[in-house]
Image 1 (cartoon, rainbow, N blue to C red):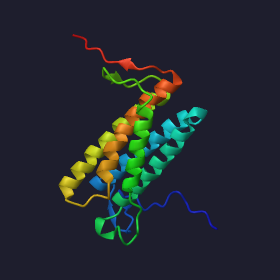
Image 2 (cartoon, rainbow, N blue to C red; image 1 turned 90 degrees about the vertical axis):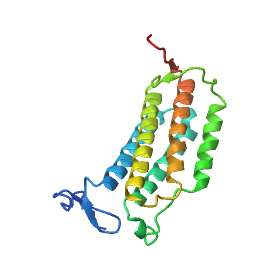
Image 3 (cartoon, helix red, strand yellow; image 1 turned 120 degrees about the horizontal axis):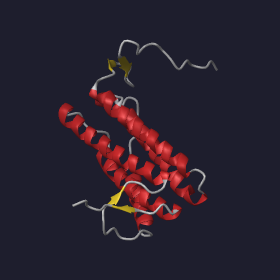
Length: 192
């Protein structure tokens, strides 16, 4: 099998192709949105790399890889016009996956001390990177809502619920990682 080239030169004039083959400007809000999803996915990859050597985090690592696949699935839907999504049988985010995420949140949260103060992002490197994932998920969520209101385009199935729950997952996971890795939590203190 012949290896494909990484560069195609088709985007050299500022356009890119959608799943359908239609071309659009790289500055289009659709491209900006799924570009941010790609950035979030990369942040999750960094967090996974920080956790890869920790044997007690294998279950978490496996779940992070499922999240990365779900982010890729969502991106593929956003890279296709809504009227063409059925033609390409693009994978959707099933409601069951969101329930799995909620179960993971509950499992980890059951080991954590109840929050009595706001916490600052930080602790271990892995935990700090998960807070970047949390804020990235919130950013993508806001951008998806703005895109939907501006275009009136139907959103991919369960996409808003997934992103909303995802930031909750990353918050709890960041705390859980600090607990397991001894990173400790840094509490917010007002400088009145």
